[in-house]
Length: 324
Image (tube, rainbow, N blue to C red):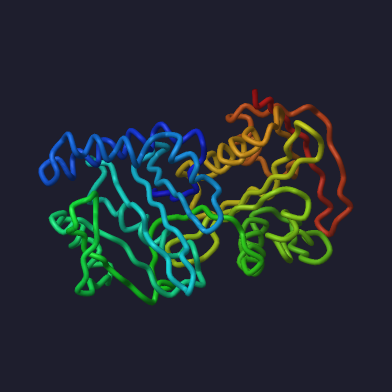
């Protein structure tokens, strides 16, 4: 399973190592090892990459396979419906396995309102040129400076909404509400007596992005290769130093690949970055598979329970875990 997700600070050293290896593998024969080392040091220094995290109008993504970081892509919104793909690289041993295609699709979909994507490729990097041409990119008759060599091909593509590939973890949008209710309906159907009541019991998912943002939290969704929401997870901060995990759901056909664990770790890293030293959560007493997941990840069930008094007569267990 290929999972594309936003890069975080903990990824920076791995991304630096990936870019160094991939650049030498790709460009040594074109630019020379010394020139490659110099460019890589200047463009991919840890502090420079870290400065890209969370920048408005930029998506800095990484690709994981079985928990190993194998690729990265960065894309920037330039206005007028145009985005620029700044870099896309896959570690040499992972090339040819669809990871580049998945990264390209995620980059193209990072800004859904955009209609044009542009990028530069060193013209002697024929493998990359073929890759982008297969994605429907075309090269107008212009050249640019790529690494100071004045021989970059500028590619352009349109109709980006049709591009798919891999699983993409991204911030939720309010427009995801219908897909989220569909996801919960699938998950709840596995447990007799569990019902989806959007306005009564799940008001936070009517406008999911807004509702989590209004209370200082965040909600993410996993989009599948068909553009459908296949999983979700959220977090907020009920007290100083404390984060609360919410809404972890994974569609049945996406289970068994470690996706749930990866989502929990993503939220934990986000919470720790914002200063939380403790994570807590409440889970329906019927969700035994989820309880096993949480316990494997170090969460402790305290014995405390609560009744929600909702349409599903929900009773929940309390779990907690230190993050430091």
